[in-house]
Image (tube, rainbow over all chains, first blue to last red; front, side, top):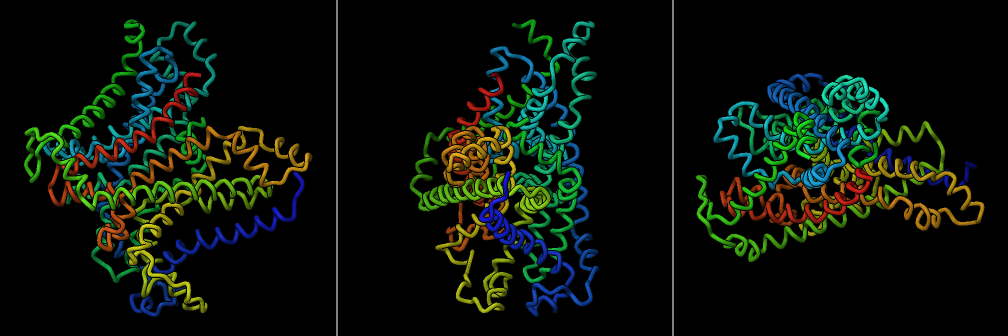
Length: 273
Length: 292
């Protein structure tokens, strides 16, 4: 396409505006996380610290370490469970054209983006009555149930784009559905599994409402801990920012290094396989 | 039919259990909302629509409802519009390397939680010592200084800005992908040859071509705007007064702090019904594509 002058000018204007809007917050966050409390009171927010204080990160890490581990255990387990179950269910939804499958698809569709409030009170009751609330299981159970519909639709979207010839050939060789699924379809859908896993992991890692209501001191997740730090250390912006940066590092690394899968996951959520 | 289902049983059973649990819990929430449960111990004694009547008579409920509508409207329409312009500009400018930079730049907040973005923006917004006001002071533009989220009249709007900031990248990515599947380049080329202006091409040719993608994106944004809780919790905690309160936040306060559990359940049902209205067109569209 030919390059139009007006378009190019508009492009650079947008480039500058977006750069400021999206780099400024993260830049200020980084710079602040390395300052001393005294430097922060100087209000030179854009200037980096003259002698960066990496001790802020040590202090912040000590505060949030247990919650990081809790989040890792919970998000990791839920990701595995939901992706696996979602793979199974999504395969059925993508292959069966029966009326049962259509009804099920609608039922799943409605729960796909279910506001957690709609099931929060029962989940808290279940976790409390069964004693699951005392361990990680309460949250693992809750998040798994809530994320299986999304995982099913994401996986199903990927399965829809797998050519059927492979399956038909395997079927002709006498393989049953389980064998076809595990030996033929799943191996070629590994990128789909990766995208779904990243989506679920990020979602669970970042979730706050359920974590806030279900977590006990032993199972506090990183988001709840970050909110607590923000609430109780009103003045200590440097520690807040350092803690927030540590808390965001895992999903951010997933985004930066597996960006392709991350974007494919977002697009699958918009039903583009 | 049953034989066919038997073949699928291992695939189906876990999903059916999950879906069954979700609908069971949804019904359970409804049951709580017509019970007389207040206080910490469950009380399932039937109370009819008593708590709904109380809810509809509360000023706080209507303030929240209005705020939710603001979120839905102002959180979604400008995002769609700006994302559309950015996505179109990226296609028109044809600068691949800078396009990659912009996409990464505006998409990184998608990986972060509202708690983290809320923490950053609280400090950007802080009225006396916050980043934005300090910078405005520094460059002599103090007329633009604002009280941001501490001014009850505008606080909700400043919270919505955070939401737009966080979701813009996602919207651009989804729209760009819609563009690509509609052979946009050729359409633009031929319309340009016919002498159509670029803006006309966007709104009269492209937008009608990507209705499906727009619908899905709008649904995703609407549902995210409806569910918003974290931003309010972390930045303003509903304040000043109730000015930034939303139904999702009130539900949390009513249920877990005031222990008016039946009222909280009623609020949950209202939130669910609003979500249902948003999700139905999405589901119908998805259904048609899925079983095409």
